[in-house]
Length: 293
Image 1 (cartoon, helix red, strand yellow):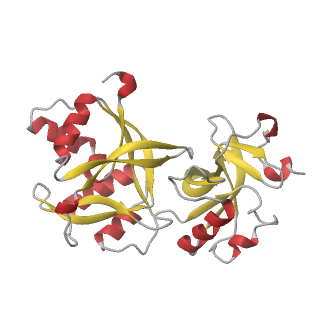
Image 2 (tube, rainbow, N blue to C red):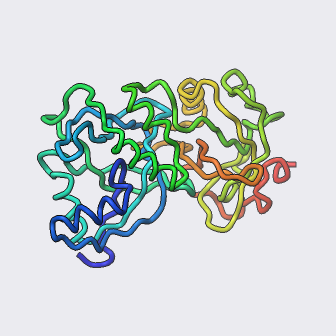
């Protein structure tokens, strides 16, 4: 496997912990190199679950399972060479305990990439299996180290899916206060909009703008806290023409971005334009109000 053939891997649970990986390799005489941590990311439309009993963990071990709109599992994107992939397969018991599967994960800049992760095989799934306190502490410590939400972990511990790990929404165009479609979100938000910005580029698409990934620019908008995450995103998915993370036909694509507000960074849902815009339509200021005045 060449450098170009390294595998992108979405890690969650105990695999967020470098020390845990090093100890596992040391105990088995395996080479721990070849596993490179890249950045925090999210697996959308999934949630964490404890429904597999691990003998080595002496309790429930984490799995990711499909979930409804607004749910997402926080984790870390890794790059694995052939040696690290073989060792990770062995650690996860692929293909009899956990099995490789391909997923789309959302990065902090709003872009998405295809990555490999592991899910518990159907034969190993049982009812809820409580994890040990040490296993919970290991996962929580690493989520906090990467400044990721622990809400999804708490849901899994309680065997529930009632809370959402990301409750913020970043808007930058006609959904902003005073704009034509602001009423779409007024019944679902729990806070007044706060001025905020995110990395990206903004384009004038005529009656509305579209945000795209950019390493250099910033888009200015408003940050809201959603009172009803599922209903808000379900409604906005229809408005924005988003047909799911696997669809190639969406007008806008829902994603997660790092938003800067009052000197802090928070994760927020946001809608990116899903097509290539005309370069001449770039709004240099990154501000729809200024670019549309």
